[in-house]
Amino acid sequence: MPILRVDIPRDRRAPSMARSALDSLAGQVNPSIVPDAKLLVSELITNSVKYGNGGPVTLEVTSDDPDNMRVEVIDQGVGFVPVARDKPKTEVGGWGLHLVESLSERWGVHEGSTHVWFEISA
Image 1 (tube, rainbow, N blue to C red):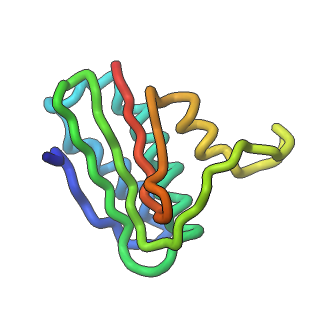
Image 2: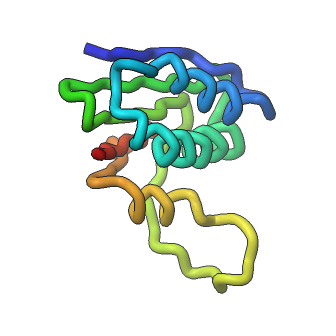
């Protein structure tokens, strides 16, 4: 059962709104995992706004243990296949999924959709 589910309008304020939504988890999850979760949510929400189709982006968080959370970002896009970053390190942009890979315990994409999830732990 989600401890947080919010639809975020698809506009330039979306990443900030998503980070603010995670603030409502105070007392429900270990505060040490919130900063990384906010960073990853910002990246995924930005991707959804930039590449997805119309309609809101849904942010959903579940947690069975305060030291772990699963975060899902869902939009109405046509889906994608994650690929390794192949741009030079000096080039701006394209770091979102690399950060998700680096900072989460596990992550993935529901095939055929733009529904990305990650799990993060203290």
